[in-house]
Image (cartoon, rainbow, N blue to C red; front, side):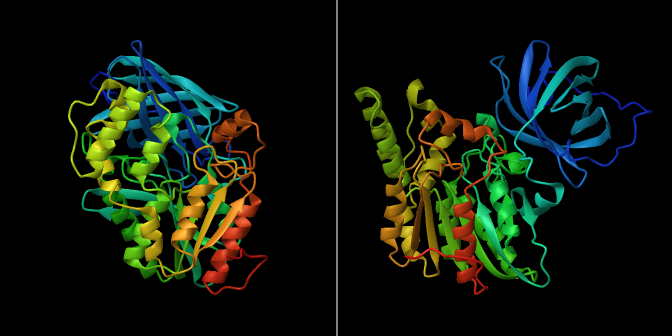
Length: 440
């Protein structure tokens, strides 16, 4: 039932549909919600972009049996005449027409597909009120043999060539802005970070990795993603940036699990500087074992046996249901590929300036992970930001507030993070400093 919602879609647009008008700031952004038809639901994310285009991400389905793989489709015939918001979605020769009305931060309405009628509801989330249309970036495309990858290039208001950083998000379902729609974690941490870098004269390119957001079609249904493919993609983005005459220096910023991708790609292509934010220092197999060590003995031991087999490069059949989410058929090739990379070995390869940053209020990774990376490359700089959590917000010791920040895009990110990384980059790239810089 993917986009067809269980029906053949043959709807026709009304001949009197209004012409699209320019998007206003209250429409621009990401809207999360559901499509409902015949007692079935799909979770969706609709993006109205500053350039006047829009797309819909189909995120998941309910227990009615639909496929839950994320897919992304461009929207057409978008007409915005407040309060009316109308658009159409085309999948091959099929067409669905949506007609809605915006009230504050909600859009509700109906849609029709070949005589089948349903409803949809959207709530605005995932785009910070701090980010205006000019600060989200222009869409760029990396064409690969297996599909197109989409990213956002954000340029500072500077004349002449400027430095640029490639921002690599975590691979596990995270989009270019640092959001994980499937987990309803919409906080825009990487979008805000990119905007703050632009204010300091540093361009950036952040992108949806294959299988995520606008790059979802680059991972075909049923195809297993390899970690090495993510490294290949990042290396290709870096190669393109190095050839672009608008940029005089190229660096890479890895975030979360994306730090390992960033290091491996940087070692292959060669960059001028590397920044690693909130990333693991342990190999992925060792980290998984540590995270599973508190499980009941039977489950823990079974998981450890699977991890050891995958580490040896061998897939495992007969995974118990309790472990299928971690070690399913589609996940095993990815893990085998990922287990071949050791963060400490990768950082040791780097001869350019490296900054390792970690927040002390990170619920996912402790400061010891950053210290492992720093120890593996003693030439690196290490900065532990007291009170910063995994989504780059400054939080108190209250875990509830910490978790709540994962879905609040209007909380500012750590000013210290922006200051330290921006000045590290400016120093490493041979630019005039604007303030204090971290010391080894």
